[in-house]
Amino acid sequence: MTSHLFQAVRGVCTPGRVTLLVALVTLPHLVRTQMQIAALISTLLIAAGSIAVSRIRRRGRISPRLLFRALFPRRLFVGPSMRADVYMTFLNTFLTGGLIGWALLSAQTIQSWLTLHLVATFGPMQAGAVDRPLAAVVLTLALFVATEFAYWVDHYLSHVVPFLWEFHRVHHTAETLTPLTVFRVHPIDSLVFYNMTGLVLGVTQAGLGYLLGYSGVGYIALGTNLLTFGFVLLVSNLLHTHVWIAFTGVAGKLFISPAHHQLHHSVDPAHHGRNLGNALAIFDWMFGTLLVPAPQREKLVFGVPPGPEAPHSIIGTLLAPCLAGWQHLRGETAARRDFQRLSPYLPNLEILAIMASGDRPAQGA
Picture 1 (spheres, one colour):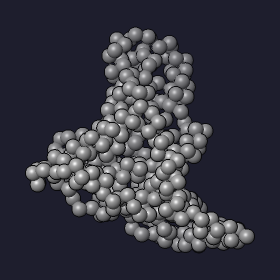
Picture 2 (picture 1 turned 60 degrees about the horizontal axis):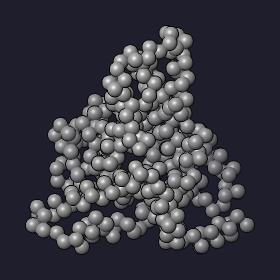
Picture 3 (picture 1 turned 135 degrees about the vertical axis):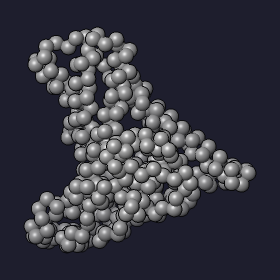
Picture 4 (picture 1 turned 120 degrees about the vertical axis):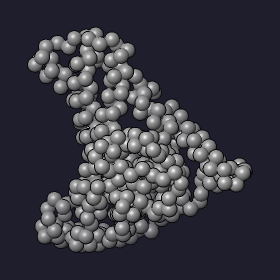
């Protein structure tokens, strides 16, 4: 009965139908806040300006029609990779938030707990130890850098720890980069990231707030750290696009540009584990993972070496990483026994047997 049900669902849920339905339901929710709307408009303007300047330099002019086609090339928005981006956007917009909600190490909780222990150990916080405006500036900068550090550490571990790579690999199976690719993240990958970020931010805010005698969160814009907000407006949504904007020289050692991140997604082994930062390149620079892009576009192919499963399918994006991760935890022999016990109940999931072979190395930094 399970077999017939599985086949029936596959017959009804064709890729085109699922993609259209998910897009219609999800997209309005992606622009439901002022920040998201502002970021979307900013992204379009910067991308259009960059493409227009590049084309005018080469050809002397560009028509609105050519500009539109350059911004939205059809090859990027059709195909199985884009369909996977769309349904994973739906998944992470409506479902993963619930998972993160109860599993997340809240920065606020950690800050409160740590502040209580600091007060108990060293005495009450000296309110106003530093002028409030200066304290707010220092904390704004510190929390921005702490966020970037947490992102880099999580990203680094996701590339070098085989168990974590199995989940992060889902993001790297994207063969085209669009703004929706940022949502192409396995729930376990998100879970690890948000816990890491919550821990680092909570410790930073408690420790620095106690020293400064300041209990605020610094300067914010639309509920977000002011510096993070600026990066979102100017760069963030361009990281997963086809637009080649390269920071070079000193700027390329300080900040991550769209070209930096395109190199990060390249299948070229020389690019594996490079440019792990989100906004700042300084941690890549410090720890030897920085690769500054060339000013002119490089010819890149995105994705990962082919594995046994279809990388853009629901099995490939959600189930296979769990099975591969379990194999890393249990070992190949024990995992094979586990899969064999499950196979009578999941007769159509051939991936269970395939994953027992385990030829999926981590992408080293």
